[in-house]
Image 1 (cartoon, rainbow, N blue to C red):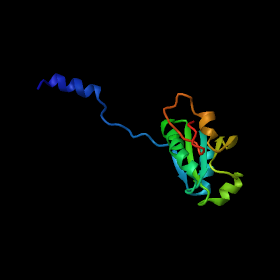
Image 2 (image 1 turned 120 degrees about the vertical axis):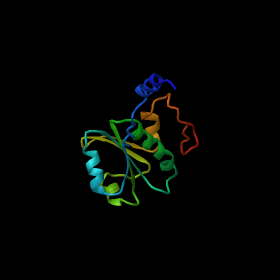
Image 3 (image 1 turned 90 degrees about the vertical axis):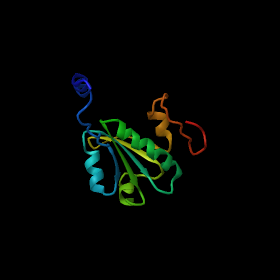
Image 4 (image 1 turned 180 degrees about the vertical axis):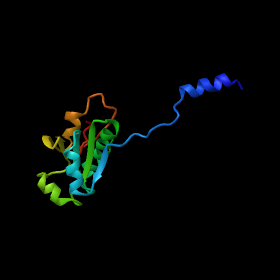
Length: 135
């Protein structure tokens, strides 16, 4: 085999790949939540529960949002695990999405409206709302 060809191939391929740090966290402590929402990133925090069907449908979308965007931190908070956090954030319905940056409240979206308001219309996701209407 030609040594020049080997070096040519090696020059164009990465020596190593750095795995991308996921910006998705399932919050289990209030202190962790407070650290995240007070960071410089835009925080998309989904409040849900294991028994909530719409929450289950939205959870992978919120997760992907954090994984695909370096400037977004996506969080999932199970209100059955952290009921006091749900009370502090005035969560009365599920799913609820809170948008925060630098500790400041930006928006609160209740239900599946987040998908209609914030996701682009050309999103490759097919989502069925609780009323079985394609969003």
